[in-house]
Image 1 (cartoon, rainbow, N blue to C red):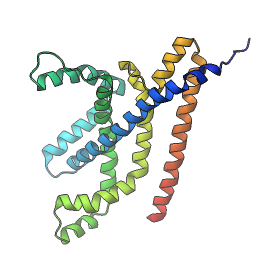
Image 2: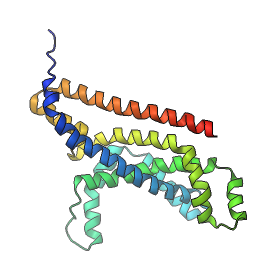
Image 3: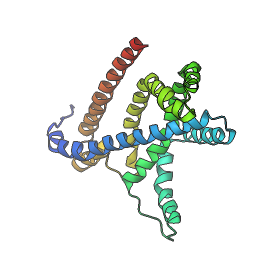
Image 4: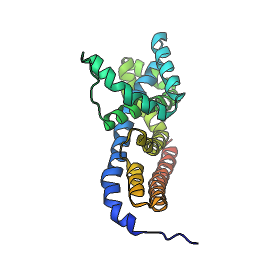
Length: 230
């Protein structure tokens, strides 16, 4: 007995799926990737620091985050951040953070550990002669890193950074555990409402495939251009 595939449920729901669900997913991906790169770069500089305390703290944070399941971290931040906020403001009650803010903090902190390792590898890929040249020009450590080392490191690791961002976009689907409505969460709600699980899950998988495959092809072309520049 064949299955009667209903395309009409997709036509009725695509505005909600993309206006609410996809907007949430893309916004979370963009903000979390920017925050993760900034915090990850700071962690990478700490890991490469000659000060043992800084490198130990950064290494401990990175190893901790990379050893935990993302779902667990999402739960942890969702329930813990309001109490931390209440403690910081001196309130006896937890502060209302909201699902999106909690998810943004979670993904920024979690992805920073992965971006840190990418940036650290990028910094180490830059010849030490570049650093020595910066010092020879009279630049201090901060100026050498800002104007000489980091621009080259970002160029070297840009394809890997973008690949990690694609993975981040896929991982945003895990926010369903805190009842946030990302693209997959919106598809699940429609599927449960109309009893059309096959149609909605298939459509969601197709959309994720098209976006991630297209982005991956762009990263591959970018990597080829960077290789030519080298």
